[in-house]
Length: 115
Image (tube, rainbow, N blue to C red; front, side):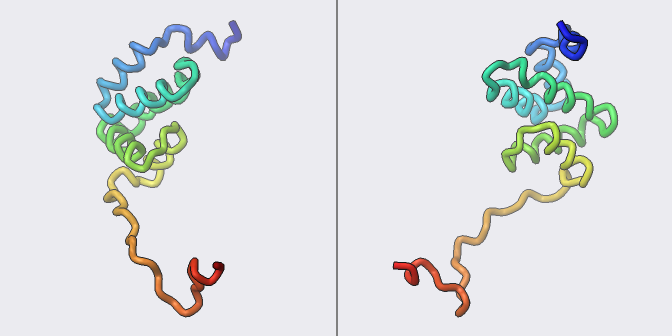
């Protein structure tokens, strides 16, 4: 096994789930979804281990809040969780759904113009 693969040899799905649960429910849910959405769960080990290691620098509370935000907006990657933490978006209020009313402006033609 190449050295880059050997370092993940002692990690299992159960261990990742146990560590993620220890950090918070949102982290556990995020890691579970990452592992489930891969053809082979082992393909998600690197992302999950990276997310778990973020707790060393930011703490479990911030990581859980960032994981909750990532789940809310539907981004299930290490880089998105890291970006949320880097920009301190875990504290920002969740974005509300866009206003469903159409924009009225004389410069906008609309669907009727093309039919």
